[in-house]
Every structure is written in structure tokens, then in C-alpha cells.
Image 1 (cartoon, rainbow, N blue to C red):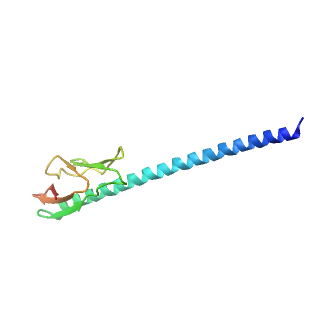
Image 2 (cartoon, rainbow, N blue to C red; image 1 turned 45 degrees about the vertical axis):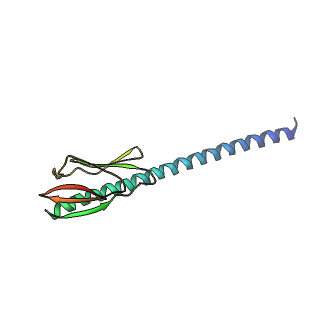
Image 3 (cartoon, rainbow, N blue to C red; image 1 turned 30 degrees about the horizontal axis):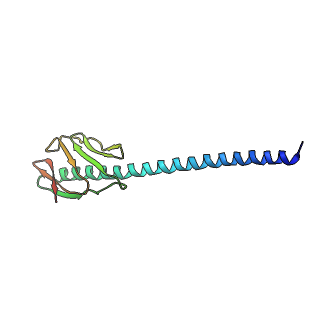
Length: 137
């Protein structure tokens, strides 16, 4: 047997195994990065939902005549979103993922459903112990 031929075959097989291992490591790294990015998207949505819920509850607790303004961000992680508020809570549909808050303890909204647009300023008003949300320009 030719020892040079066996050495070349062993070297070729070793290189192929190393390439397969590197490809697996790169694939795993890309998957983890993608997962991290999705988690960051959900984090920003959760923060926004939490802020809106806190504002609604704060305006309700402070009583009749109290109001507060809030400007929605124009995008979440460079993507658009839809924010909906109804009697059961605050919902955001962003990146085909829905994030929502806990349900309100009482029916405190004046209207049954609000859809808020990104980038606009909204005023949350307590009128006769029910919350009304008004879009400001």
C-alpha cells in the first residue's frame, strides 16, 4: 500500500469532519442569535404594554378629571405594530407575535375598543370614573 495515498485520504476525511463541525457551530450560533433577537422584540412589546396598562390604572385611580399624555413609539425594533385596548386588557401585535397585559379588574374603559396608532400622542382622561383615550396631533 502507498503510505502517501493513505495519508491523503486520512487528511481529507479529517478536514471534512472539521468542516462539518464548524458548519454545525455556525448554524447553532445563528439560531441562538435569532432567538436573542426575538426575545428583544418581545421585551420591547412587554414594556410598552406594561406602560400603557400602568397609565390606564394610574388615571383611573387618581379620579375624575385626571388625565395623562403618552406618545407611542413609531416602531418597535424597526418594525410596525398594532396596539389595541379593550375591556380585557392591552394587546400588541408585533412581528406576528401577540403581547398582552393582564385583564382590568373592572370595566373602566368608556369605549369597548381602542386601536392606537404608532407614533401618535394620546391623552388618557378619567371622565366620571371611566377612561377615555383621545388622539392628539
